[in-house]
Amino acid sequence: MLSITFHWQLSQIPERAVKKHCKMCGKLSVFTDTNVRRHNANGKNIYQYAIYKCEKNHTWNQKLAIYKTFSEHIAEIEEQKEESSIMPAIPIISLAEQGIKVIHIVLDNVIGKHRIDKVLANQIEDWSRSQIIKKIEKGTIQLNEQVIKPSSRLSKRDRISIFID
Ligand SMILES: [Zn+2]
Image (cartoon, rainbow, N blue to C red; front, side, top):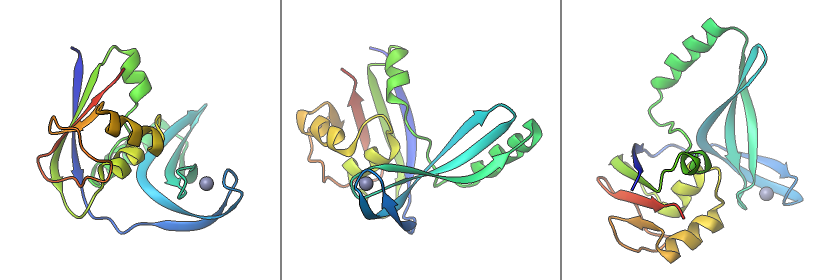
């Protein structure tokens, strides 16, 4: 079975939160920084966004920077390596398209309290938190080869397995 393994380090980062009107909720909502960063290229420009989510998991992309040239983009990538707290998002749909059936995530280090459903909702853009909760309850997302609760806390050396159906 084709599988892929990611290594994560979860740290206790002070939550960056912004009060902002959420179009989907139709009200003022608290958006929290997921610590996921995304780059979009558009012709000569590369845009860097921080991905924020409201309490209902609606996303808002805050534009952080625009890079105009290729050389500046290289410099920016080097800069981001230093920030170990930033983990890349897991592109479930594109991994599934490549024939990946199982995704393993090994937690090399865990500092602070982290719920499995919340961490996965932050790192997996293709699935909502409620979809992730259903998969944990169904057992297609497991922790150390066990079916666990969505509220389960993560510890150092835990192994998350995500089975793609
Ligand atoms: Zn919302």
